[in-house]
Length: 462
Picture: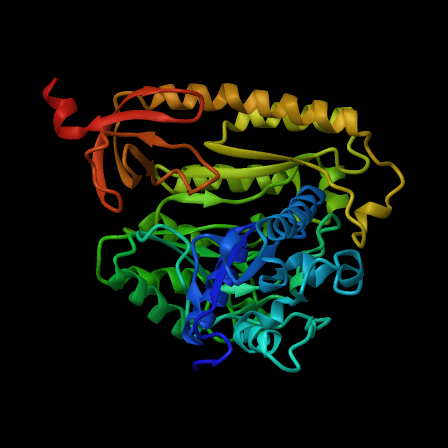
C-alpha cells in the first residue's frame, strides 16, 4: 500500500552480518518500495538510511557502531543534516533495546526484529510533517517469521537468492546469544517455501540457498517430542529438499547451517540421491575435545562427530564438508587445543572456518571463571588457520586436471558446488563466460583456496 509520506523519498540500506540478516534487509526494502519509496543504491545520499545491524559478537557490534557513527558524520559534513534520517534495525537494536537510544542519540529511530514487515508504517510516521517523532519499536520477544507474501528487493546478484526456512533457535549453547535475540525456533511450512522458490527460479535464479539458525531442525518445532527425523506435521528438512527437487529448471539448491546433532539417515539419503541439491554440507562441529563440547552444551561428543564425518564420506559420494571451530573457549586447555589441531589434520575438511571465542554478556560461558587469555586465543587461532591453509592447498592441488561444473558469478569469477558465496573459494575462469550461467571447466591450477580453470572444450583440445 502506497504511503503519501514515503512517495518521492529515497531509501538506502547498509546490510551487516549474515545471510539471514540480508533477507530481513531485502524484505524491508520490498515493503518500502511497495509504499512508494525509491530504493537508492547510494545510501549516503538517501533521504532515509537504514543500517541493519548484527549484534552476535564483539567485532560485529563494533562494526555496527562504527557504521552508525560514520553515517552520522557523513550526514553532517554533506550538509544533509536533519533532512536525512538514520534508522537502525537488526540484532544490535534487538539485543540492546534499552541502552542504545541513550548511547547513540545520532540515530533517529531504532526498530526491532519484529518490525521488519512493518517498516513502511514506522518510516511513514517518522516523516510526517506534523507530529512526526521518534517512536522506537522493539518488542522484548522476537516472533516474526517471513512468508511467501513478504516482498523482497534483491540485494544479491540476479542468479543467486537466499531463502529463510526458519527463524530463531532452541539450542542451549552456552556461548551463543542468538536465542535471546531472535527468539525460539519457528519453521515456515513447505507450502510457504515452495512457491517462493518457484518464483525465484522463474525469475532466473540459478542457486537457491536455504538458511536458518539450524536448518536440520526444520519442522521439528511443531512437535519437539517426536523422534529425530520426524515431526507431527510430517515436514522435515529431507521432505522440503525432496519437494524442491521436483521444481522444473536447471539450478542448484544449497543448505547452510546444519547442526551435527540433528542429522538423520533419511537426510543423508536425500543428499546422496538428489540431483539439484549440491553435495555441500555446512556443519559446525565447534570443537572435538569432550570437556569443551560439554561446557559448550553442544549435545555432541568426539565419538559422535567422528562417526558423523565418516558417514558423510561413506554415504554421500563427492561430498564437500565445511565446518567451523571455536578456539579459546573458557577452560580450553592446551591439551584440548592440541587434540583439535590433530583432528583437523586427520579429518582434512574441504572448507573450514575458525573463530576466536568472544566473551558475550548474557551468555553462560561469559560467567565461567577460567577464561582463556586473549594472547592464547590469538595464537591458537593462528595455528589452526595455518594448519587448515596447508590442508586447503593440498586439496586444491588434488583437483588439478579434474572436470567440474561451476556457476559464473561475475566476469572471470565462478564457484563450484563445493563453494558457498562469501565464505569459500573461487574458481577463476574465462571472462567471456556469462554471469549467471553454468559451465563445465577443467582445473588447470590452484592457489591456497582458489582454483584456475578453462572451459572444458578448450582444455580438452590442448
